[in-house]
Each structure stands twice: as C-alpha cells, then as structure tokens.
Image (cartoon, rainbow, N blue to C red; front, side):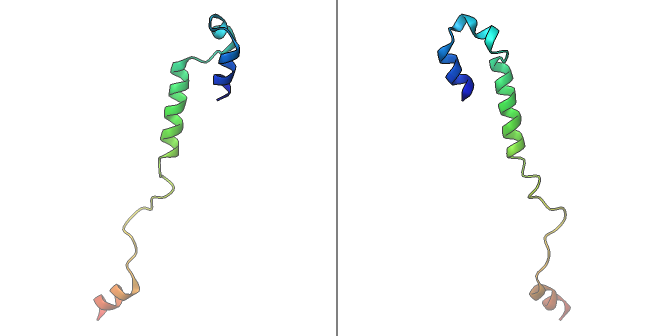
Length: 61
C-alpha cells in the first residue's frame, strides 16, 4: 500500500532509483505469504481421530 501511494508522487522514470523492488519480487513475496497463511499445518493432527466413549463401550459389550 505504501509503495502504491509513493509511486503516485514520483515520476515513473525515477522509480528504478527509488524503489529497488521489482514487480516480480513483489509477486514472489505475495505467493510465499499466501502459501504460508493457508498452510493449515497447525490444525492437522497425526493419526486417527479418537473414538468416543459410547462407541468404546458398545464394542466391549
């Protein structure tokens, strides 16, 4: 957002001197950010979900 606001104040032919970041770099950062945000690694649990007590009692009976 800040880069977009600053780009309106600076003439386009000076962008390379002021903004050392290219569009490709910004897109790569965005892709990594989205991939990290939507990973869901923290929500996954290994193995099978636990069996309820009612089902255990039924099996044992």
